[in-house]
Length: 313
Image 1 (cartoon, one colour):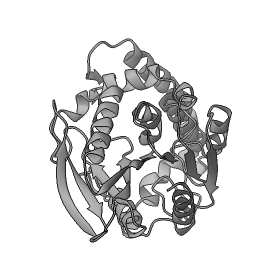
Image 2 (cartoon, rainbow, N blue to C red):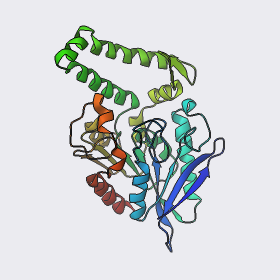
Image 3 (cartoon, rainbow, N blue to C red):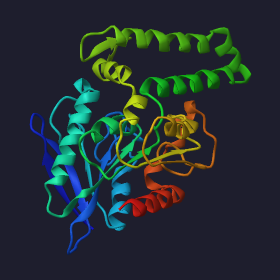
Image 4 (tube, rainbow, N blue to C red):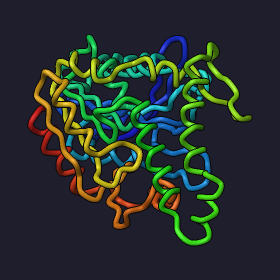
């Protein structure tokens, strides 16, 4: 496998990594990796302690081993890419992903008729808009298909409230007396109202800077309507132990799509595409993800991905 750093884009220069098999007499199919939410780099890693997830570099290595060229990149304001991450909205992310596709189409080693998009988490929400007008060979939607950002946040908040209500012993008694679960529910509603009514790219909420533009544009976009306009085959996969996206929602997207759509739930896989033995609650997510970057990607997931890609190349 060969890796090289590349850059693309006009108003903001975006830096990424292109991986490809060392030698090939013909142009090869390519896969663009579109990352999940948050300030993570082209490899799926954050700067904070315990944020070495190694999602996209491991995915790229697997896919390149299967004979695909892959492109992954740093978001605006992250890693080497120009721009301000906090001011980056939904449509900015779509724009940058389209620029990445245009870059791939210009490469002689890429078969421009066989370019796929693999979106993880937030990448699932961006994918239908990125696909428009690009004549892609297929979409792979992982850990987030079938629901809007608002629905995903509602799912996460519901798990938090449930976890708080299920606390036992002295801790549970204190939480009950202080009505922490009810307060958490109200905070979620208050936060959404604040973001929706905002006009700026960035606002302050309870002392913290919030990317209001990003939230507003996500809340205004209906991914289910977008899915109905997709013109290429779709593979949608979620893990049964995902606490950041509702696993069962993945099957619902067939009600909206008008193309060949395969949906799968990988038993035991979490949001970081690793097999997880314990049923960790959302309040224990840091513990569940500790040192997860050192673990291999779920073999069952990789097998599903491999078979689907081979059928559509």
